[in-house]
Every structure is written in structure tokens, then in C-alpha cells.
Image (cartoon, rainbow, N blue to C red; front, side, top):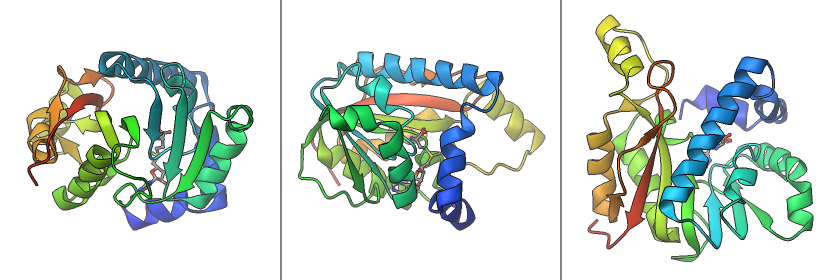
Length: 218
Ligand SMILES: C[S@@+](CC[C@H](N)C(=O)[O-])C[C@H]1O[C@@H](n2cnc3c(N)ncnc32)[C@H](O)[C@@H]1O
């Protein structure tokens, strides 16, 4: 991830701003609702139940949606201030004993193998320009999940992706063709369950891939 962006996420003011980001205007609230609805569809496709990892959890935006499918969610993020924001936002769930928290990098999680039914990794790998960095995350998600991994990426096969490439637009995020993500995921035993779900290929690159966890070959 770009060090400047990471240090923003790791500051208290940056974490607080990220928590408010999706509530700042009606258009953001609408796009947030749409995004959460494809997360919901991805979890439905995955048949998610039981214990789920939400990493990176950011300010806890996805967790209530995940809890529609899961009994318990562990929210993890590399940024302690971000976890503090999530903890405040999700206080009633923590009090009910259904949410807990960890500060950890997605490529080095302090959990045993197969701890979760599903590992959700939303809005992280599009910040990773190097395949090696993404491999660290894919391997760790596959290790801690016993059945499913749900992971978002910037889909370069969308209308927006193709248009940006044609116009030579400089991109701050790393976009991948779906087949390239599938090829990167395969050595970790991750087999795609259907085609990635897309937010809106005209306005957005966001797509979510659902994987079945099998035997790793790496
Ligand atoms: C764009 S936010 C996404 C948060 C949340 N999934 C959401 O969609 O609201 C990216 C998050 O990734 C976290 N992060 C960055 N690098 C990370 C890493 N290597 N491991 C875990 N979290 C990381 C940041 O602290 C930040 O909270």
C-alpha cells in the first residue's frame, strides 16, 4: 500500500475521517448501500455461517452486514486507530459478545489455521501493486478460513477499467483482470465460485470474488 495512504489510515484523524467518509453525502450513502448489498450477495453465495473474519475491518463498515450471516465476527486491521473507531461503532455488538477485535496485518494473522468459516477481505488488495504482496494476503486468508474466502479487487475488465486503459489514465489503485486474480489465488487452493460480483462496471471498478478453500499447492 502507498506509505502515505497507510500512514493516514494509521493516524487517529485519518481513521476518524474514514469512519465518516461513507456518510458524508447522499451519493456516498447510496453507493455505500449498494456496496454493502453486493457484500451481502457474496456472503449468500458463499453460504457463510459461524465464525467470520473481517480483515481489514477499517471502521467496521461491513461488520453489521456480515453479522446477518455469521454468529461471530473478528474484526482485524493493521491500524490501531482504525480498530478503535470500529470498536466504538460496533460497541453494542461487542457487548453482545458477537464481535471481537485484533490489530494485525492481513498477511500475518494471529489466528490458528481454519479458525473461520469465511474470511472477508474487502478493499485491501487493490492497494497492493505487487503480486508478491497480494500473495501474502491470499495465502493468509486461505489459511485461516476453512470453507470460503470473499475478496474484493479492482476489476480491469469493467467498462470503467477498459475506458481508463484506453485513455491512459494514471491510476492510484492496482486493477486486475479477473483471470489474473484467479491465477494468483489458485496456488493457495482458492477456487472461484461463479464469476465476480460487480458493483457497477460503468462507474466503479469494485468487484467481489467468492472462493472455495481447497488444498494449497504453494
Ligand atoms: C480502504 S480501507 C477498507 C476498510 C473496510 N474493509 C471497508 O471497506 O470499509 C483499507 C484498510 O486497510 C487497512 N490496511 C492497510 N494495509 C493493511 C494490511 N497489510 N493488513 C491489514 N490491514 C491493512 C487500513 O488500515 C484500512 O483500515
